[in-house]
Amino acid sequence: MPESHTVTAKSEKEKRFRLLRNPGILIPGMIGIIAILVTLIFLLNRNERKNTYVKELIGQWEILSQHSNEYVNDAIVKDTLITYDPGYLSIEFKNNLTGFVYQKNSPDGQFYYSIDGNIIKINFPGQAPLYQHFTVKETILTWYVTADEKQDFPNRGDNYKKILYFTARRIK
Image (cartoon, rainbow, N blue to C red; front, side):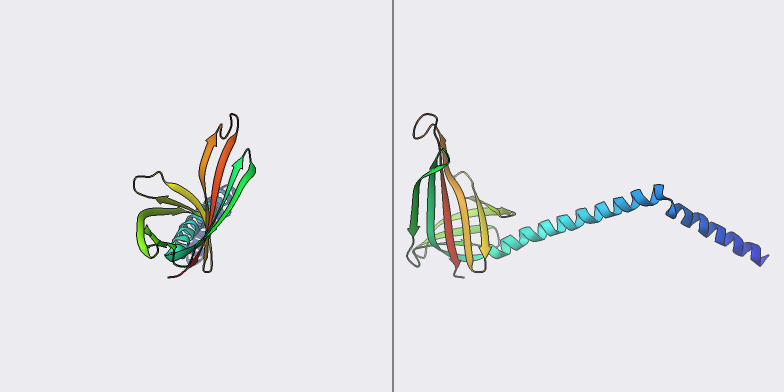
């Protein structure tokens, strides 16, 4: 009798494992598990990357220069570089997603910001939001923004665009 019972147990185990070895069940199940894992890893990395960008920005940055290019029909018509004296202009990003602009070390305006990837959206009260592409490399912050776009300027049929590029160094 014990032999028969052992054979039955083996056959039930074989039935269970036979289902798992069935390619019609195994392959779609594995693909589903892999898809879920890839999605979770992507979402976790995306959120971690957003947090990393916020952490990189937190602090005060002294603005060193503003470089602007003005284009008409995609050709540069004006190229301007402005450098700022030390302590003249700075920007501060706080970890509560607010910030301040300082001129000569005195507060000159408050703003709110949010980050998506390497794009920062800055909202000054009462103004349209500014979308700026930025990078942080060690103690240097650079960003650019399209400041102005017009059609039929300066002449009918022309397309005008002004892009501002900023460079700042971390001071706090």
